[in-house]
Length: 448
Image 1 (cartoon, rainbow, N blue to C red):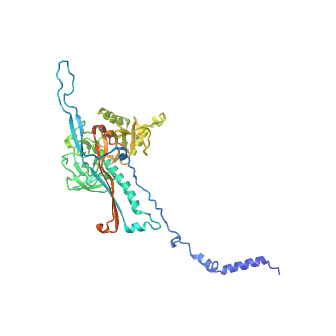
Image 2: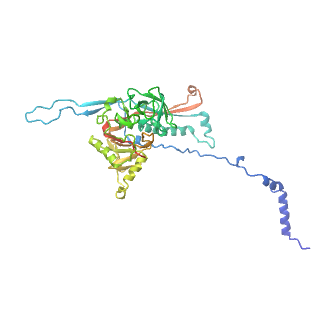
Image 3: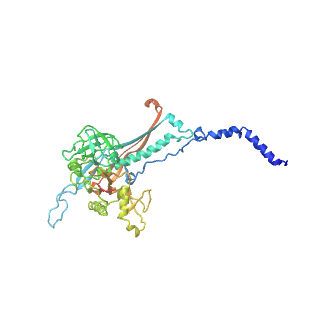
């Protein structure tokens, strides 16, 4: 009988003891035959970081580009529109003096507009958000988000479109493409033109806007039908750039060749009825609801007319779609021209040459180009949303007058709200002022 290897015998004995143990015994092998590892047993739980990222475009560019001034002691301003008849002429050696006449002074006024943003959090949410896995200081997070939303809303008010064609409607509602419904704000008064008898003497107040369906709810008024033009009769918030750079009786086609007559400030409709009047836009280049491509000729015409009226364009404002169209138009020049310094006119001041402010700025004929995602788009007669408009502006005649800078109000009075919540409010009081209507221009009905 062969001798037993002590080492092998010891190894076998140790293996047997392991199989009989509680950890590696038969019951362990039995468990592995019909049990699987389940991550839902509390071994791992998904947790999320405190940082909250944005899926929203919070860029505010036009508001930052326009000079801001203190409101001052008045609510109105004056614009000289005529030199006076016969007050200047040649005088012969013994001739009479020119007839004494006075300048034509026009008055414009607008009271401050208020824009507000609210936020809040329940007391319980404030506590639980600080537990493990929470967002931390939820009230601070909501306050920070409200600040972004507040400035974004003001920028969107300043760039709200002034007239669109309805695709359907009734006595208390009308429908526009959902992507442009936000240009109508609650509290705005909207008038209708169906190509027949326009409702230009009054407007129906907007009470609700559905940005998903494009349905806008208004007070009872003239029944709206497909093809009718809906234009802003008066604004509840800030006067928009589109209201200012406009001319009444603008042909938007629609049903029966309807027209839009948006009103800026307190100006009467008849005061802006003719292109070339003191308060009519120097250049409003339309194509009657038919899309066309942006061209350098269209831009040149706007620049030319502003200069003819004594202005000097200092800003080209457009959407990103038109920005890249313009970039392609100028791409051949990029091969030969290096990067140049530029200056942006802001009121009576200018930035330092080449100063960067976070904007993607290029120039055309020395005029800075500023893309803004909130620039309004046009709509075709077939209810299709076209590309964004292009504005050529002399910013020396544009300003945002601030009556009250952004204020923050917080309410922790639980009895007043009858709930354990903390609420906050941000509000700003001001208005967009234009001191020279005929020194502004825009191009509409552009393809994307």
